[in-house]
Image (cartoon, rainbow, N blue to C red):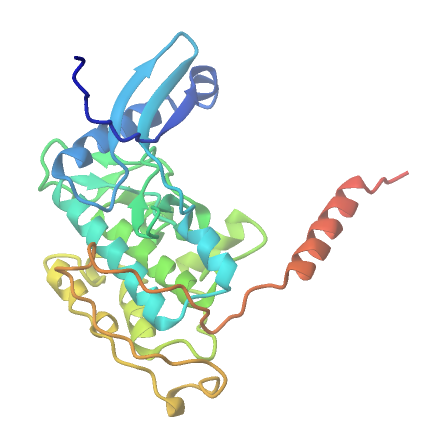
Length: 319
């Protein structure tokens, strides 16, 4: 009589395929090594906020990274779907990013390209940080002091110290700057620093040229203003003037509910009860259902009209 073996549940994996020719052509061979090393090191700690690396291999033309599947898409797509997040939802996702980044820093790793597109979502819509091609992995986990760096990151989220010609540095404070930009994006559905070109975007970053729209939550505004600080040493969460505990203890994460007299748009916007962040259950509690905040999603017909305009403009001929 044959023994019946228990069925092994199927598990899906994602495979990131990287062209060797493209890496060499663009001078980015080191980015693949950085990503593999960062993911391998983060996997040992078992923090739930990161994609897990299961294997890495290569053939003559490509590199392959076998990682977790993120069926929920990414945070940018989710924000676009809802236009912007309510304070309650923005608070939850900001807290998950903060918790993951602070833990990552404790392991001696800088991401250096934090943005909503690199915050993937699992099947329960919990954060999984990804894309570590710009990462820095320190030999000593306690050494994330400012260091000279070539340009890394994305224009709208790059920190001013990297743009400073006399500094050109990145540090743990650079990731915290990016978190400030992300919080702004979650609440408004728009970039804090936006211009027609990267050069003009950088000019805005260098002088803190951004504005808060009506209805922006008061505590969220205070958090953004404490993170978007030109001097890296003055940012909330940066030692020795501050630290991780101070960042987690910020009032934005305490769950104060906005009242009608604090914002002109409160009469037309829902203001559900916003419970404080419980950092001990952040990754096990049920995520809040996404809901729209101060900016409504763009109607589908408007998106199609804009896409048509771009397509027609691209087809235009000058005789």
